[in-house]
Amino acid sequence: MRIGILTGGGDCPGLNAVIRAIVIKSINKYDDEVIGILEGWRGLLEEKYIRLQKSDVRGIIFRGGTILKTSRTNPNKIPNGIETIKKNIEKAKIDVIAAIGGEDTLGVAKKLHDAGIKVVGIPKTIDNDLEGTDYTFGFDTAVNVAMEAIDRVHSTAESHNRALIVEVMGRHTGWIAIESGLASGADVILIPEKPFDVDSICDVIKKRHDNGKDFTIIVVAEGAKFKVEAEVDGTMILQDMEKDAFGHVRLGGIASVLAKEIEKRTGFEARYVILGHIQRGGTPTAFDRVLATRFGVAAVDLIHQGDFGKMVALKGLQIVPVPLEDALAKTKVVPDDLYSAAEVFFG
Ligand code: F6P
Image (cartoon, rainbow, N blue to C red):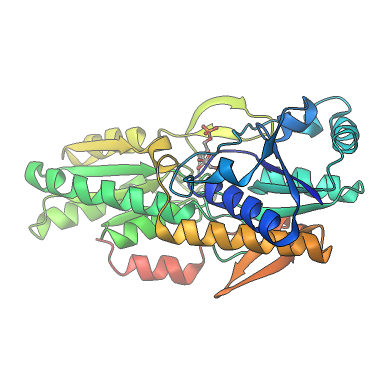
């Protein structure tokens, strides 16, 4: 078989581990040919390919990023995009596409599957917001990077009697915030699933001071929402109004707004740190390397079982196939019980 692999959307730690696993398993067990498609869906539109041999994937399990490069190119937004991709897959004699990505990349994979192309999906994103899998790879590394950063700001917040706000990624879900905040003993965790009003945060800070705790660690997800007066849904802070090819706005900056408001309303000093892409770069944790490797190995078996239109997923301890349709049906949000566990330590 001739398998085409691509990595699409934002990069994340563990992508190279999946590529390595697919290449080694498919060549060793099935004598397949593996074609690396460069820069996500753009590579199929512009016919950018490389042949992948076992020697190309040696020594990459611990490397962040993706040796295949990535892009947020959306073929649905390009005239005849899906048709061009279909034609190019045929021209390159690729039998099946292994698409490694989040909801955007897998959404295109599903569209191609509906159009008669053989595809399997492998779920990646630091945001962990994909339904159908307990975890996506990349998330654990992002949580550990954030946890370490929060641990570090703890001592400086304490020395200066400040509120220290750490903004983490996660788009419209608070997975990274809740897990890194829980792990580092944050005093307040703000996530998109639970819109908040600034006065209640200020009350927490004042109460801590009354109780002799003169510093406060606040973890805020980039997509967290302020409630103004009687608003229910709240407002997000955007970096700009421009949208990417998949219609996503650029989030970020809520920590700076929050720091200003806290200083204004409490009179206490506040500082903020926006972790940004640091969470996505560098070497993956052991958990992500293992999960990514298991996903890659399982994806090759799915391909040889002819089980297309599916995504490999982690359910409990097992790797199982899940229809792409189910994985894309909705965004996986932070469940109430996880938030409640974190809430025990607020204040
Ligand atoms: O989806 C992963 C993610 O890192 C989000 O957490 C973040 O909002 C977004 O990508 C940033 O995208 P970009 O790398 O295009 O700035």
